[in-house]
Amino acid sequence: MAVERTLSIIKPDATRRNLTGKINAKFEEAGLRIIAQKRIQLTKAQAGEFYKVHAERPFYDELCEFMASEPVVVQVLEGEGAIAKNREVMGATNPADAAEGTIRAEFAESVGENSVHGSDAPETAAEEIAYYFSGLELVG
Ligand code: GDP
Ligand code: MG
Image (cartoon, rainbow, N blue to C red; front, side, top):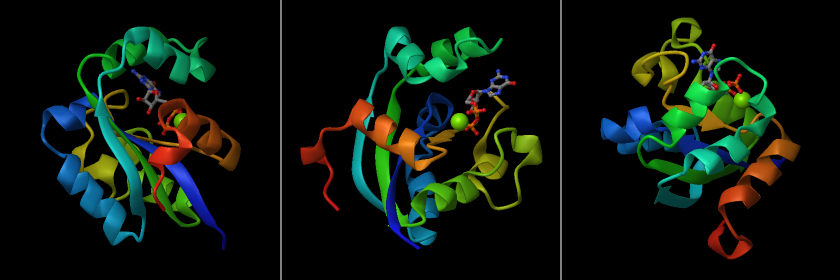
């Protein structure tokens, strides 16, 4: 399996509850290396641009408000099959459906405030990494 990079976001519900370290431990235990990381405050417009694929969904406005409500930690994870591995460690979008031991099963508050974002494919991973990081910031 190829070494991949994926974009991860620790969302406001998790940064607010000081869960960054516990979530990062889950990534590292799964063999994902955090090769870039920063804490930022998104504007609603920046959140909207990032999530524009969901612009027509009924929860879009709520999602953008939430992502801009408090700081987030954006990060790049690297490892063998990192995109799928990260999605596995995250668990299902709705914490009610998330497998035991996953980040969302343990920490998410609701389907909207679900603690983490992870890219879903190589193309989106590349786009999403470039949205938040310059090449110089990625130290693999
Ligand atoms: P993900 O890839 O597992 O994060 O899920 P999606 O790409 O389908 O959705 C993006 C994000 O939108 C999710 O992580 C949630 O924060 C939010 N979201 C998705 N579905 C719902 C929903 O039914 N209601 C609300 N309020 N938010 C949702
Ligand atoms: Mg998604």
